[in-house]
Image 1: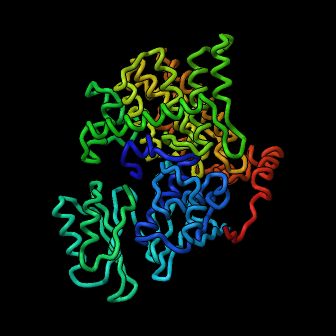
Image 2: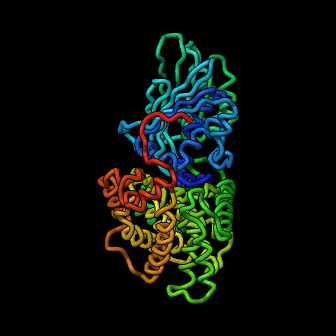
Image 3: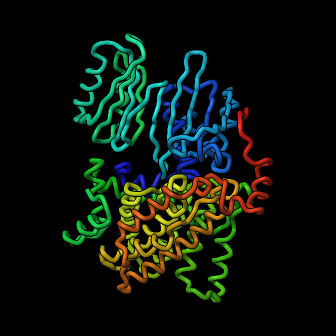
Length: 220
Length: 298
């Protein structure tokens, strides 16, 4: 089941006008921001399908940028997010893609600064709910049916065990897990689906681990 | 855990519980949170809905200027005592419109199940409040009952206009509202399902064709009619009328219609009312030249 909670249906509390094109878009931007770990200096946003056709009317652009500024779906600063970002010095480009995506509401968020870059593909599946389908070229095969976290880590022995130990100490059961890397010894990615929602305190604990670079919740 | 409406009704009927109770119990099981925490979160959502209706009834305008002020007109008309179809229905319509006018103005709302269809559930809830005099707890239960039916639709069909058209958004919202009205009015779980089925049957095929891609025209008035549809269907179900096609099969039909609906009619602003001469003229007026593809530096 894609939708687990009644609050996926009665909620989120959000700034209008569209749950998929505004709230979902803000959430995609915010996942990118939390994975990047800081406010980017530039953002290239590619919009596909219905996102590309209607983003101006739905405020999809201000919502994604609002997410990059770490604003929640109900944060009224979303409305003025583009000028806030620009006054912070963020270079923003929107690209209306003509390619037909697998899901009609797809956005590719490519962000960075002089220290690094991050590319993420997100889809907004309705009612404000999102899924992340790609991160830095890693394809994510998430069902979207369970709460999930992404752990960006250094490809070292013990990194996976240290993460699963912390989850175990909080009695969080792992339902599905994938580890992928592009090159031995470089950055790697753990995708972990669990049975219960993960508290922010657990995320902080994970982030404090050696070899863990960044942790983000992607499905709630 | 219930997977469809038949299981939901069965669970409620055999345990002699309300649909809202079943939804609350499932939420406790899935999230591991306490009943108090779950009820409080819904109470917060209810407060957001109340504030949105209040703001809309005071009059708002969207940035495009396409919508706003209709909720005020309707309230004045109701107060004139000349309404033909009854004050409760018109009150529901005006409060649904109020919510969606606030949404179009980028105000704060609670998606039910989506932002574009956020008016129907609160509109009907606050309209039947005067007649049924519910407690705060019963108003919160109303939202859990609508949530339970929306949950089934979201998992078995879709609540996204881009994926299923307006039938998936306002159609789902109206069905959810009808079921919740029935429960609040004292109907059985089975009657809730009948109300949902009767409503959704009359929303099948409804396309998503927003002018200029804005959640304004025709979205605000579709919420108005979604609310009216829900009120009438709830009365029909309470009168003992049943749907010849079971609720789950109606939901499945909605899903299949959504899949075969052309992309031009699924939130792309390429067909339907968006493509009418007036729709195109409004679009050009709001955005300048419509739909230029390629890179745009901002």
